[in-house]
Amino acid sequence: MKEITVIEPQFSTKFQCIGSACREHCCSGWRIALDKPTVNKYLKSKVIDIRVIANNSIDIIKKNHANWGIVKFNEAGNCAFMDDNRLCGIHAKLGANALSVTCATYPRATTSYKTSTLKSLTLSCPEATRLLLDSPDAMLLDEQKLLQSGFNKSPQEQNVNKLLNLMSMHLINASGTQVNHGLYAIALLLLFAKKQGSEVLNNSQEIESYFSTLIQDIESGEIKHKLDSIASNNQLQWSLLLRLQAYIDANPNTRGLRRLRHFVKRLLYIQVQNIDNNQVSENIVRLDNVWNVKVQPWLEEHPHVMQNYLLYRLYNDQFPQDSVRTPLSWLYLLTAEWYLIKSLIAATAELTGEINKDDVINIIYSFHAVTTHSPAATQAFFDEIDKVKVNDDISLIYLLK
Image (spheres, rainbow, N blue to C red):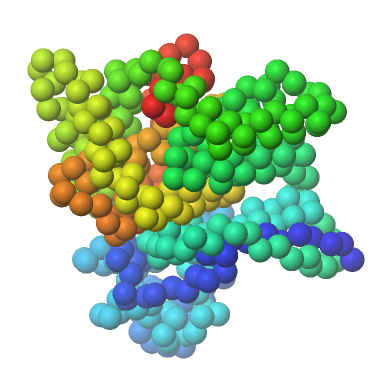
């Protein structure tokens, strides 16, 4: 028997689908794929209603075993199996065991390594986002050991990435409500690790000592002082926001897009004011002032909200990802997405005169509904970043000002 470590955030362990009470249910607006056994089960169901709907509303595509068919939407844009009460007809008439793999697992997500399994929730689900942002303990990680017949059929997690991930999460924790300080500290950590190269683990005492210094610098205000001493680049901030918004607005209609566009329009309204006079800096300064005057006091009363979000991203994205891209490029992407979310929140607070958790939940879940499930979105965001960044990835610091 082999021992496997299973890790899961507390908010994930508490998830229960709220069905028809959901602010935007997952049975509408996007592609619902069915595996081969599920397609056959529905087409041959003894329940006449299910069999009739299946024959009329499942397109057989036979792309692969997991993507054997897709569900066509009805006139209301919902899954054909949804009933008048916005509940799943499959679940009601055939039971939970009859659900497809997609429907049975969403929004649950799993990342596997050879000796560990990391469980989580996908934030494109509004209820998952609410759970993440509601509780100060949402991102406390539960860990248990399980015995199974063999190791997971996945690569071993790289120790360097595991170390950098753990240190990054601690830096965000130490930053409290000033998560931009934590992101800046992570950038410094990655630069230090880059200089160490392949010897970073052999020189573990050096990186641990540097990490401890970063924690102290956050707590003493030294990180804040360093950030304050960096000149702002409002043009970069303005250009990146505009490019990311343009990509979102050009998306084909999908779940979450209508709600996200509602908030994007508010941000765009502020961004384009006085644009004929080339006063883009004034608009960025306006957003910064709103964040500091209206949003930051609210965050002081809800200190876990932004902290939980970034801790989730570090954990769920397995930052820094092991890929052809550098850790700093992944940090740039995370920082750019955080900056967009931050700006959407600030614009809403400015135009409505208040900030409330429902708006924050709606912004974050709709953003993830539009971007998380499409590899093309990640590539598009990288492309937009490359068009505006100055020299190299360290220019991400301008988004932290």
